[in-house]
Length: 187
Image (cartoon, rainbow, N blue to C red):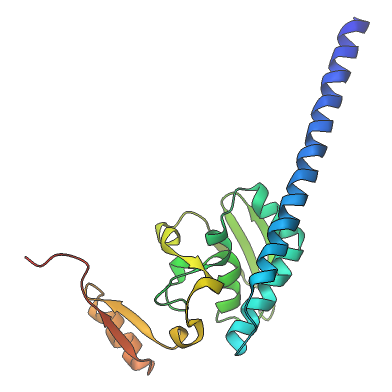
């Protein structure tokens, strides 16, 4: 009986020690990744990139970054944007880039788990759920890798297959529309 208790205690201590080691390793990984990301961030040139840089720095320095890594988030899921229409294609926005490019002036991250994250709008208190797993995120790039991000934010790129309603909506907003040829073969 005493032997069984000693074995259980030893196994429990082993699990705790393993968890502590894993936590330290994850913390070191988050610190290393965060430092690497911060070192490559561009200098802000306008209010949009200023907000992206500010939120990215805040996120990688916070406990949320470590938690996101623990939950298996990729850099695309955190900082991704669509290469052609970074502000318009919300389905390709990562969590942090989506918070920075949101129409809401200030969002607070209140929950993060394996399925997504919950943000709260400061002004209204409304909650919004960002969900992981949208297929478009696989084609996103980290926002700092998107060439000419600021000019791209002012232009809408539509595929030939884009619905006519999308063309009308963008034209009504007064945004320039660039037509991209169809990716499908003719015939």
